[in-house]
Image (tube, rainbow over the protein chains, first blue to last red):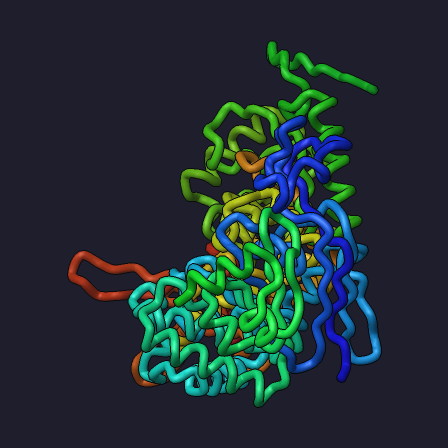
Length: 276
Length: 299
């Protein structure tokens, strides 16, 4: 199986940082705030691998740094340490050594991102079709009719009524907004997709349909995905492998079934036990 | 630097109102603007004895470029006689003794213009200065100047095209009537000041140097002679200029000179009738003269 992404020793510190930061934070210290210099160790020493068509779950409580990992990989926030290599066909991109133009190119052409809140990923002042068009235009598709056709095909695939293609997403329901966001992220058929708490805040039946959709897309397009969630149900349904984070550190990593059936770390045991 | 004050008629101002340091600043910005076609060069815009937004950017360019042997034409919406043009012309006459003014496009060496490029093709011996209210076309899609600069640097203009897409979806055509985003020399997209779409093709491969100055926004940019200027459009929805056909599909003619290939202004009379007339008054006069000449020859 082809590797898509390799992340090693990723770290992100907010604040000045000091030599005691790493030893005095983390799961054992029950904090990610360094008592010596007041820096926040958002993530430290996170490593992960992702292969073609695989879905990797990142789970953990609020503030554990799971979103920070994805934001660093999607260039929303520059990390303070670590490296990541994206394997694209024959080429390899060392993500954090690229200049901003190259990073923008990867974001536009090869990556997709679906945020928890649709307003982060969508422009509510333009139509649903316009939002998808924006992404296609960013990837240099310059034919109006081709853009229109692609937008229609994508929305149809996402089960959004075609009659609403020219409506603004602010008039949509939460589930529909999320589906438009996924359509936008998939518009360029990216080999790597980030999903950040995509089903949080949606009711159960809508959640289920969106999760089904994500699985179907993974089957169809062989898209590699990183799913960030605190919802064990989502982890169980979608992912093959998972990592568990707490206070910015990876405390457990492995096959999802294994983690959920036989958790090793005390925190994971508590997490699994509480998810009845 | 040769700072020459002229004191004719008790006038203590230097030739061209601006001091030599201010002129040097503007000229330096102009050189940079020509060297990087379409790039908005920031410059130290001076206070002028008129409100910002009344053409101070264009005026500073004009006053920095003008020499005593210059023949200048000042137009506002194609007319030499509207208020903005008249006031600017009087100011230039007052501050630049020896400079001659004209209303004839063919005779001038320097044109300061608000919202129009003359119909008569300009020559390599001429410079046109356009007054610009909003220099940055990205301002409608991105409020942060910092981010806009990055977008310009990376030629990241997809969000402007999204606006065009939205227009096509809503109205079946692009509804921008003026300030049409235009890509210069294959990279930077400029806001070509509020010239109508009609004038946008004139930017392309122009023989004359086109300078654009925004006094309030403190930016100067240029379309150098014979530079490519491409209006932003989709591959399959080409750019088109204003359509002056009436309900029957006939091209409207100027009510004064009968010209069928100029940009027309619409006038509504007290009775509610609409008439159309050339927006470029010098062009209209020229057409009338030609008709007169032909009539005399045949008589």
